[in-house]
Amino acid sequence: FIMNLKKISFSILEQLIFSLNENINEFIDNIRLFSALQFFKMHKLSLGKAAELANMDKFSFIHQLGKFEIPLIDYETEELEKELLRFKNDNSS
Image (cartoon, rainbow, N blue to C red; front, side):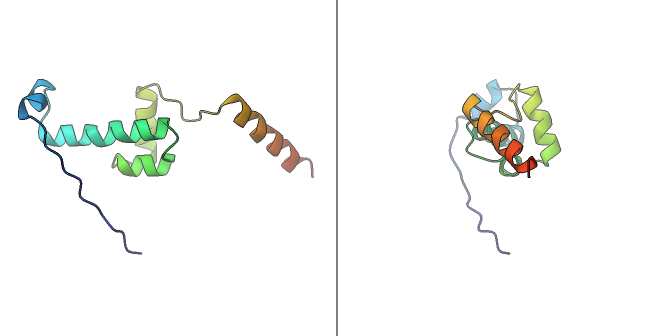
């Protein structure tokens, strides 16, 4: 299984990193984490893929979700009703 990696780079003022009181590696880690959290929250990435983007295992990423008060399971009412109905139908056979 071959993975194609893409390198992403962008420029940022050094002063901005200093004002965050971070070094470059902490900044990069945070960019990865915050991107992963937001994509997960928007339902654009699964838990596993978001954890991958954040460069973490799933359990560490779940901890970060809690830290930032992002629900692990976030169903719209209609979605939840469909899931519950499907679950009920699957178990009634």
